[in-house]
Image (cartoon, rainbow, N blue to C red):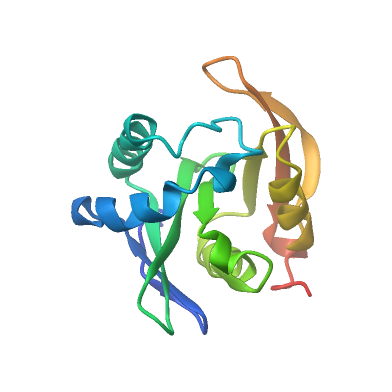
Length: 175
């Protein structure tokens, strides 16, 4: 079965749908908040020229999803599937960001829950690569059951902590 990297996923709080070219303005309106990126390795992603590359890469990835608040219809962020590895039976979830107005509640948890449930129809494990300084994202992944499993260095030489969730151990949204 081929991994479906751009599904439409609907939860109680949000909808995830494939990212489209005409989503740029609404998504940049969210991403232009510099505080979203303060712990992220790409802390300048709020700048238009940096975000343009991020958006272009997201479109080319074939796995980017736009997050929409179900109650308001507003764009609130995005996430992405990446690096599907059939032989290892794993896929990465990453490049996730949410508007600060949606931090600290249930939106990130529901986003990851929807993405994990979808992924586990195809793979045995999901990985997350998180910058060593990005404590906020590390805690968020731990909250949904991610366990640190070493580190990886990407093509640019940047090291990230690797977190993994196995389908057999995943029980759904953690409180």
